[in-house]
Amino acid sequence: MEKAIVFKNIKKSYGSVKAVNGINLTIYQGEFFGLLGPNGAGKSTLINMLAGIVKSTSGSIKAMGFDVEKNYQEARHSLGIVPQELVFDPFFNVREMLRFQAGYFGKGRENYDWIDEVLERLDLTEKAFTNMRQLSGGMKRRALIAQALAHRPPIIVLDEPTAGVDVELRQRLWCFMKDLNQSGHTIVLTTHYLEEAENLCKRIAMVNRGKLVALDDTKKLIRKNSSKNLNIKIDSKDVQKVLKILKNFKVFIENEILTITLEELDELNNIIVLLKKNKIKFFDIQTTEPDLEKVFLQMTKK
Amino acid sequence: MINWKIQLKGTWTLLKKELLRFWRVVFQTVAAPVITGILYLLIFSHVLDSRTEVYAGVPYSAFLIPGLIMMSLLQNAFANSSSSLVQSKVMGNIVFILLTPLTYIQFFIAFLIASIVRGLFVGLTIYLLASFYIDLPIMYPGFVISFALLGGGLLGTFGILAGIWADRFDQMAAFQNFVIMPLSFLSGVFYSIHSLPPFWQKISHFNPFFYMIDGFRYGFFGQSDISPHLSVAIVLTFFIILAGLSIRLLKTGYKLRG
Image 1 (tube, rainbow over the protein chains, first blue to last red):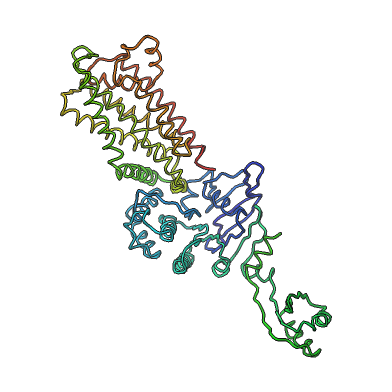
Image 2 (cartoon, helix red, strand yellow; image 1 turned 45 degrees about the vertical axis):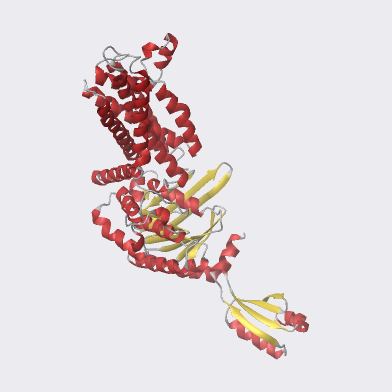
């Protein structure tokens, strides 16, 4: 697979604070990639270095094979970046802003149809002639996304694009991004909505305190780092007995609810059989699925 | 290598955006300074016309007009680039330009030309309105055009430097009130420096605004306090120094890129 973005031992320090501390990461063309991490982990610094807004202390970054500092013009042509902050230019309307943005990349009238399509897909057509100042927060966010797409870049980087926006826009946006991804665009996403990342991203990297703490296929990452749990509610007088019976399992008890970590699904049957054999009465039983949130918490608490 | 047509389109787009930006608020950016200039003309000429003659055979009103035109041109050229930059920085929308493949040279050229255009627009409007008040023939159009372009360019560049440096509106206001205003008022707009005591005459020679106004005035009357050729050389030197500094700061990303 061809490489879209390559971070090579990239570092960024602000005085004694190491915002990004030696990250190596390759994102391939056509990927839908998730970059996750808690606040202040270094995600935005990483994106800002990719965009050329922030200069790295050491290391290198390439976008579509072009160094973002040495060949910044070529690199930036391939990038469409949606900044996290809700910024806008109060002098212009939505369509003007999109045409200006595409114009900076050398795109003219031949690109107008694409701009209209972006407006349509983000439900902004009716607001095309509205001044940016008069848009609601959600609409401004849409316009910001549209601006990043205006020059039709092969790589689209969305830094918290759904922060504070309604469900409808999220659905529309993800639908549009999936289409763009299917047509060959590389999508890099940072988000705090882990469910979104889990559903959309094929691969995920987790960053914490400026370092890469996990990088894998989303499903593998979840499978490797989070197990299925079995929760059973029992009578309080049976607690000690049950702990003895299930001594070979990872058991955690709280308020008469046993939480048993299942390494394999077969263990579920064994546990039920053991409890029944020992005449343990249980009042409720349920299993919880492993998810990205658990992996995230596990990875970022270290 | 990005081809020249794409580069040209990028520069033109940024220039167009900068021009539209001031045009959208034309009452503030053009009408207001024109009114101020005309008011200066009416009041000063009413008070001083019968009492003062700076150049032989030239009424005070006629002497005043080129100075007022140039002063307004310079102040507005400065205001255009500086306010656009500081506003974009404070509001955060500078990021829209920083994310693009535009080079620091393209950035400089677009902001510079937009500043010159606004300065010329204000200056030309004052000239046209003043022409209704007093007959003002131009003796050397070449000098008038040269000083207008050089002056607009110099102050546009100065505005870029101030816009890069300032992080807040109050810093920009301080720059305007404590640097630009005194330099423009003490440059010989309202008087010839020959009317000043020798010490202040010498001090005036350190003021770059003096050369722009004196040279510009020469284009109208063929009379000036110092040689217009020397003024062209001095203004051009200032422009080259400030343009070099601006381009260097834009290249390094000083106060623009983290």
